[in-house]
Image (tube, rainbow, N blue to C red):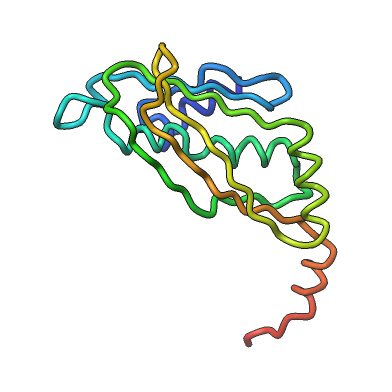
Length: 157
């Protein structure tokens, strides 16, 4: 059901990409990006914006789901490197291990952190057509401190 909701969300749907698989534990997500009239650019290959849009929100959403409400997770920056024109369907696989989650929990005990995640858009033969590096900001969501800070903050009257 979540896969269907994700694919119907207008901002993601506009990329032309589709989520094809979400693991039950949310530690793996797979994306497919077809070359068709909605993703084709002026020279007949997959539009670079569609390539980036296909992978943009996935790591952030995975981490939000895996870490839960005790953490704040935001996309901070991204870098994409186009390696080959996309002339066929491209695929991306996103994975987050339990070890990664353990490292994040330990590292955020000392304050906010940035983590960089890499994903490639590959064809059926496994050839990379674009490589994306996503920097994700993560911190603990200290609700008690936040509510105390809000209560003690000066008010504009």
